[in-house]
Image (cartoon, rainbow, N blue to C red; front, side):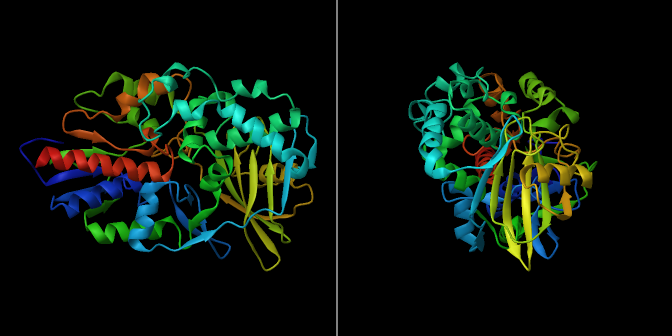
Length: 416
């Protein structure tokens, strides 16, 4: 309960992911009595660091990049150690017709880069200042275009399948389920450069896991943290909800939320991918791709050691791959690596997780223009912060930190 009469604390933060931890740290360091409530028994939200087969393993959000200013500032602030995902020595593509072959970059690189540039359109005009998404009004005008629509303009079938696989991986679903502007925006954020975009999605990660940065942030701010805290009643002068978009409709809000918030939550965003970690026999540094309707759209090496390879794969939907079924996982891996001998696999089903109900956010066609601004607006003394409606790197750790900083700034101004 948020009221100007005060209560048990000054600020109540709901949710212990990066947005919540950021907001709680900022409020606590400003001298406000801050309580951080997390329904799970851990912090992290849709990031989740574990140990698996002797290696730090991220079940959710993983990669960061220097083009992501908010998370990079935190990395520098706390001296968080990073490591690099090894570059692939072999790139292969499973075509829509089932054919699997190495991609000859000497022959196809120029075509791929040209197709990506054409696909992204006039990104510099649409997002000249990509952290100010409403500046030009152009994204709203193109909001009904799906991420699959511009693929039809790519004449070469191999290049079209390659770009489709890249897009499906980025939007965490089949390309047709997400809005095209959700691809143009991160491309602009990465400097309108394909290679920087790819690096931002899969090169640098935390050596000791995302949890290491979270721990540093909590230790710095020292908010009161309550885990497993679902159902508690606490009075506060202001509240910050960091609940994901897909979960908003599951909460009884009083007074009721803006109907556009609830409408967007009922629709759900497009992010519904599967993520699976796989251990195979032998040492391979590979990057494999497959178009939208494949069980896995991408499969890449993350670690190689002691005669074994740790891979991570992303698929568009649980309908196409049950990550808890070892036989389905092995079949999906062999569609991309036919000779692979799968030794073990693990995953976390974010779509079935009651506190997530989906993976990273990519907005559906029409949601940018109708819902984004409404999702960002406060409701009285309740503020809303989530990577799902970030101005910049939506769906990423950077977007969560951006939103946590913004909400804390608004709360401090209100309570001043």
